[in-house]
Amino acid sequence: MTGLAQELAWANNNLVIDDEDFDEIGPRLERWYGVKIVFGSEDIKQYRFTATFKKEKIERVLDILKTSKEFTYQFDGDRTILIQK
Image 1: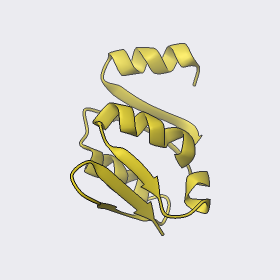
Image 2: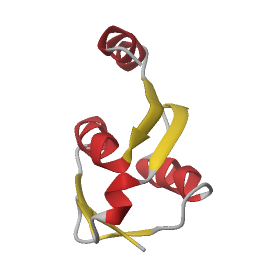
Image 3: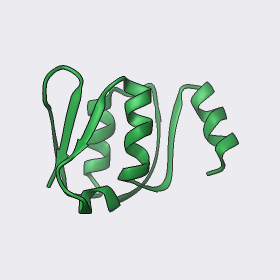
Image 4: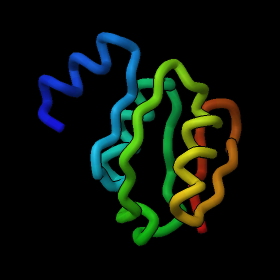
């Protein structure tokens, strides 16, 4: 997805992930939800996803992403999410 298309999706409260790896998605999730994403291993960062979300909670987004790749997540404190195998 082009930068302009992502900006338009963002403006319309849509989070669009278009064949992107977790390493690319992480910073966007951090900005979108005001959290810190920490990966438990380097290989998880390479997991690729395609999805579109509209006003979903971060837990729902991660639960949906988990249906296609095997990982777990947990909150570490109030605003940090640890993603691991």
